[in-house]
Amino acid sequence: MKKITIAIDGHSSCGKSTMAKSLAKALNYIYVDTGAMYRAVTLFALREGLMNAETKEINTLSLEALMDRVNISFAHDENGRLQTLLNGENVEKEIREMTVSNCVSPIAALPFVREHLVALQQKMGLEGGIVMDGRDIGTVVFPHADLKVFVTASAEVRAQRRLLELQGKGDTTTTFAEVLKNVEERDYIDSHREVSPLRKADDALLLDNSHLTIPEQDELLLKWAMERINA
Ligand code: DC
Image (cartoon, rainbow, N blue to C red; front, side, top):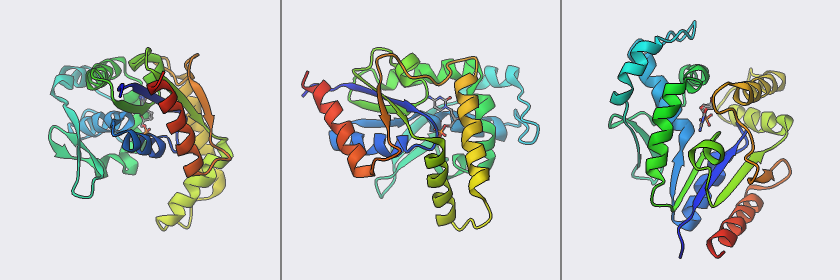
């Protein structure tokens, strides 16, 4: 069977990585979470003392000089869960923590960081048989991807899902209004930054999952992928 390249972009908190992962599993393809790569560079900068977590100030000259020393790869743990490795060290847990989440946007806006990571991502996709999720996959990384999907849901639906997730982790103080404000702010930053802003590629299929269940959206994605594989 033909091995195609699948690009999944979209807004934050709309379940992109969940759907990309299950599509990759169904097709037996490689899955690449590019957000994890931007997070790993952020962790590197923080650890090297090249970014101030409070002021968000970045020593860009030194970070740029060290970019060749940032090696990011992925591996599966004993339970089959995907782990992000920074220079061989498993940093999956650390890159999801608030410190990194709060610092990743300015790092992802640096042109030399994007250049370095885009080159790595393009190398990972050389053979096809890949599902990659991010913000610029269909527009910059794989402009000729066989299938491009742009995922979205209303800000209210995404905020409600995030709130439930936080509450599931024991958070009893964060309010719906706070989460909604954060979702709207991230949308604005992602779509208005100068380099590679989030936008739907002209040839991407729109998937608004505001009113879809997870099995429904998985089924739709798999149908789209099979149509391209059999084309
Ligand atoms: O998907 P995520 O929340 O893990 O992404 C983390 C950050 O990286 C987010 O600020 C958007 C940015 N990002 C990006 O600029 N380009 C990508 N291809 C993936 C993520």
